[in-house]
Figure 1 (spheres, helix red, strand yellow):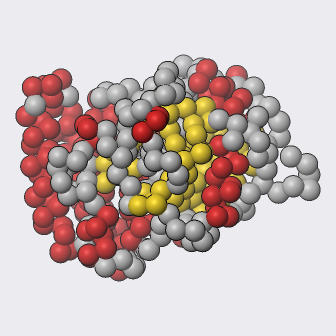
Figure 2: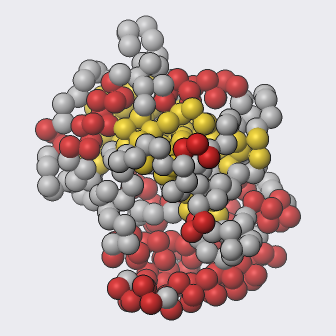
Figure 3: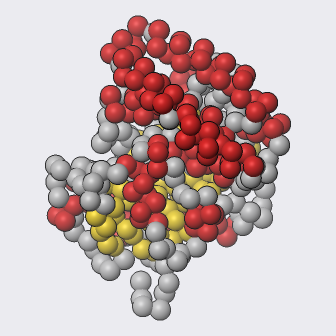
Length: 337
């Protein structure tokens, strides 16, 4: 990128003990066909391998030290501070974006000028013929999941689609709007903070496009661990705050009724024995944080532009249509700008 070319997007990578995966991610960014970007790597006090060992390709990349493990949400907000770019991209260190990734996202922002959120097509790092995620889905009876996870690449919708929200492993947000709502909710620390942000933006009337050709390879839970105590605690705690903050009053009681049934069913499964106690700790922590969530709820609901009926239509109500069957859940094909 020459001195005269201004970056159109700031890419934020939150690093915590990513090791060699971070270097692969940085190297993949360096060969993007769309070179007009800047990258801020926020290091959450990594312990296993110093972030200073990462080879930065050029002046488009810089490292910002958080000084402690402040969490994924706060670290992304820190990385976004001071940006003058019209767009912000969040990218996990365990991803490897394909060379056309940024080009596809840039073209999408021009094609769909009404959209303020864009998601990437995530493919399994160890088997790119399998989908890791095609946008986030929010269920009234369970929680959130990545649409189409585990399905064959051949089963993907052929073109761009409108979805509930983007997965922050590789997402794009309009920076003025991100700033307006205060970015990610830092009390979430990690997990579901991207769905929460998407929910809040949706309530303001904003929309999200899942960009089919914006592809990244994703290791998925490579750092925090799938069903680790860390992930289970934060997932169960944050799902309560997520629904409490965003759900309109008329939907709140049926949603929490379905949530109670869904949580009980998940914890009574024989396979839940190894993480049940951590999940209960997470739920208890959510109750202790209810007052803070209620304070945020008041502001969110006061500014809500969507009707209760419109919110209800965004949620998946059928408990049989969950992530376990790997279905693609999209709102529909996108109209042209």
